[in-house]
Amino acid sequence: MPVLQIEYDVSDFGGWKAVFDRDPLGRATHGVTRHWVYRDADDPNRVVLNLEFPTDEQARAFRDVLQPVWDVSGAQSARILQEADAGTASGYFLYKLIPPRPTFATDMTDAEAAVMAEHVRYWHDLISAGTAVTFGPVADPAGVWGLAVVTAREADEVHALGAKDPAVGSGLATFEVHPMPDAIARS
Image 1: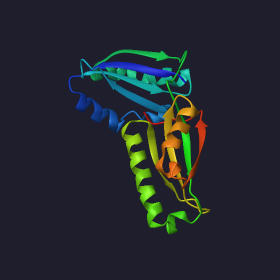
Image 2 (image 1 turned 90 degrees about the vertical axis):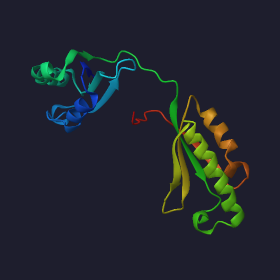
Image 3 (image 1 turned 45 degrees about the vertical axis):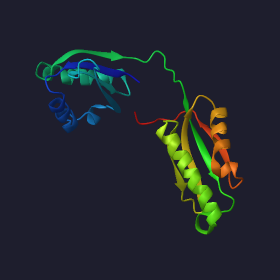
């Protein structure tokens, strides 16, 4: 998808961002599907804005709409970019924790609850490390089960995490790993 990339030198990022957030020109009505705002690490008043569009024509049309306001907004340059290549160091995987019985969430023993407390600490640590994106129980009417979304280079890494999960290591639960090849995540 094409991206309209605009660079700004602003005198006050907070003021510029407040106007951007109000969206006076209606980005969505002009076809913007996603946006990214970047600040220069060495100059926080240098801003790069990327606006994604379904088509080049929509990107060009919105660039034309913006042209008259750039003298006021401080735009330095604008260009339409087409993705030529993309890669990622890792992908997303679904980790499904399967409890020993469908009623487990409502009838676990004290010993099982202690194992599950260790399980929760383990996944909290993976969240803190940036390995897990989210985790928690899924209220499936057929029986509650656990879900985590994990970033890893390959499924074997997620299987290794599962083997170390206290709920699995204790023999209390089993797990499945499924790749999410087309996952889209919030930046």
